[in-house]
Length: 228
Image (cartoon, rainbow, N blue to C red; front, side, top):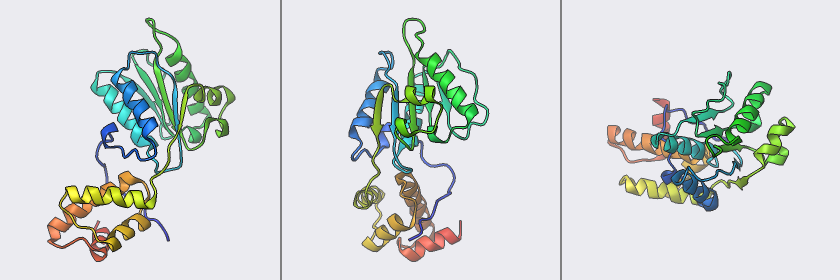
């Protein structure tokens, strides 16, 4: 069955606290511990897994948490066409979508990595990276590929269909919504398996159901999509 992508604009800000960690508890605990104690000696961290498993959510959540603490962060992803030079004010470097990097982005990522791990004022800076493949399988320049595998490597597992339905049902209940089994199956099977996208869909369904004064049904979902 074809899955539909969603494009409703900006979704809720990713946070470590709103990441559903079923099967990925060790990775989440590691990130939470480091964010809570950013001044300790940093070990490079690399997250990998298929699309929709939460890699970007976690990276953005970490970056936001550090910025909230007054810690500047360097961010590089595949959409960054002209990477900035390394900034010594950065307290961490975050590299997303490493498997998609161009030669220019790989050069910048390597430069950022080396500079971040070179001690300044007695300590190095953290490097947090993510990609779709384990470090050994990345089609990147060798010096960058090997460095991405230096420290902690966590394989993120996607939520299964039953787990996604459970999470959606909990989220719906907190909003006072009732989702039938048919609606749940339709949402999980027809839309992106990315849980953040499904949560975004639920938010829009909540608003649309209030506006139209209708219960959430499959026809209502189709009607909402037709009117977007």
